[in-house]
Amino acid sequence: MSHTLRWILFDLGGVLYHIDSQRCEQAFAQLRPAIGLQELYHQQPEIFHRFDTGKLSAAGFRDALRSAMQIEASDQEIDAAWNQLLIGLFPRRLELLQEVRKQWHIALLSNTNPIHAEAIFARYPDLPRLFEEVILSYQVGFRKPEPAIFQLATHLLNAPPEHILFVDDVQDNIQAAAAQGFQTLWLTDPEQLETEIYLRLVSSE
Image (cartoon, rainbow, N blue to C red; front, side):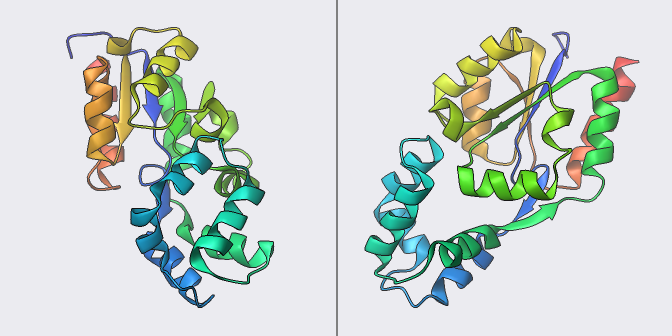
């Protein structure tokens, strides 16, 4: 690489954490909605964008889903269906992060919301403690691929983007980070991460 690598900035879902949107869709289908979750996402994406950027509270999100999907579901039923997206950390991710942080600074940058974040960190309380910075879209008011969230990351990490490797599984996010000057790793297969990190460890020795 042409620039010294100081930080690795990890995405969460699809990189460290296994998610499955189909499970979420199927769980909401059990609530007998007038419109499916994926169809709603395409028709009214602002509901999900506002939730991911903290402009809509968890209570407001639940009410928006009840209204848009025409369901009479409790908060607990909606949360349970929404959290069906979450499967768990990919194998060896905690161990990998422990190894990586011996060599570089590490941080987390995730498009997420309070319902998912609470569920993930309740299940894996040690996970956020591994990172020097945890940047969650609903807490900072921006989401990937918006340039502002990458600019905020460089400020919080106190490093120029060319010294930061951004790892994500979404091509649009990778392209947005690259446009800001970040080094990037587009993860098309979760098993690719350990190999790629190992290669960078070896090349830096």
